[in-house]
Length: 278
Image (cartoon, rainbow, N blue to C red; front, side, top):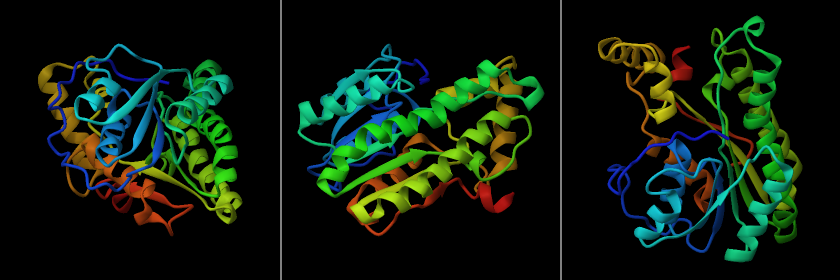
């Protein structure tokens, strides 16, 4: 799992309003929860009443997400784990059951990327991308499903990408992994729908996370960096801007909530019109 170390303050998310109890009484496990989209989702879920197990490999972020949530009156626990490990995924589910008494929502959000064509991509990088982006969703779901099947309900949300729907040059491994997440989601939705379990995925467009911005700015002067970010926004999105992590988190919130009770097998694009432009 990857997570960008940064030092956001308590007021980092001005777009987030007060919760309305949309997840009241629910327990959620969110991977990749200490930065970017996962951090925004964990915070928003807690504001909406969920008790949150915040899973990440990287702990050194101030304030750590569980501390931030609890400072706002929410209920959360942090679990440091490598979600490419079956044992770690079993342990994060066990923690949710032990600490909060159940598991209603699983968000398989941990992810990473690599740039390159097939001939430029090492087998090591290929396996790392598949492990983090795809296998972690399989392992997390495999750990959570027995409990959800026993209860006869649950919601699983996988973070895919518009790169799983569209082909982009020199993103062979990333596109392949995210396309696989979308088809895994749809297959699971068919298998577990009769058991009351909804499975959806979310396909973000370019989002202004530390990792994304850092990748665009790497090796560029300040002026070149500004131009590069503008180019990404202008060329890829009808709205001509990048998403904020909070905007993606609201899509996750909808899929997790009872408002989406008849939604399953869906790849929800929160992409500023990227997929209609391609």
